[in-house]
Length: 335
Image 1 (spheres, helix red, strand yellow):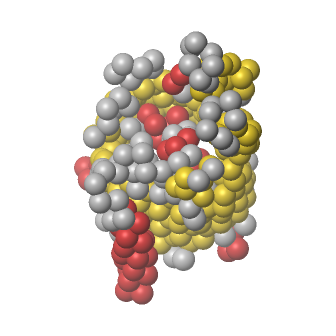
Image 2 (cartoon, one colour; image 1 turned 30 degrees about the horizontal axis):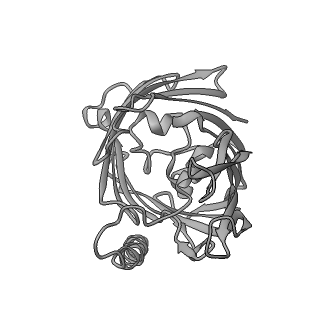
């Protein structure tokens, strides 16, 4: 047991120091210090309904998007999930994930995220046109993540997991000046692909069902467009969750999980997520959460239903302050 505890804290400390050394490179402001920000958009209505305080609670195939160690909590042989997010500015964010529980060999998973930014009107600067620009036609930016996951329980209390993923983004064509006037230019394709990985741990303390989790996401080399390079939005998260009703020996058909996640980001100051989920007989669930240190995306709420015992339906609603509200829906199936 002592070895397990030491392993957990060593991983947490090393992970924290790694993220901290990267963040420390930004001396003045952490704003706009990362690219491919679609990676920061949460996948899964259940976690979003809890205010993104989901690091230590993710326990099905959606855990690949939150904390890969969580897929060790999948009880049946196969778990599949998919979701749709109507994001701001008519952007759609969709995902698909599946895991296979191989018993003593661990849990294997695969996941896919696709982002559609819609159709945009292209322009470039011009010294000739009186408007100062010319139209270059419409284009449709998109982004994709394809990944593999592996997780294993070292004991009945401690688990670890890892994601290896390929991240790709296509922002359409761009125009780079080759002369002294704007009409002298060359066309470049703003397409970029990069491999990245996530590391996660999950630890049950032995006190009721209190669990702790650590996750570091989007670890990669720096790449960029034209002459500018940037890292992915690397994020270090610490989380904890517990069914507080277990403190009072209440009938286990009632569950009230309270969760807290603390975030240390590469491109923003520290953030805090708090959330709650009440479920009855693991069939109906109500959720709510709040995120601190956000300008727009603060409060969220949602619900979940278990259909035919094996099918999960989850919905989350996030009312933004000035932007349009965001709706998410997820489906899951275990067999």
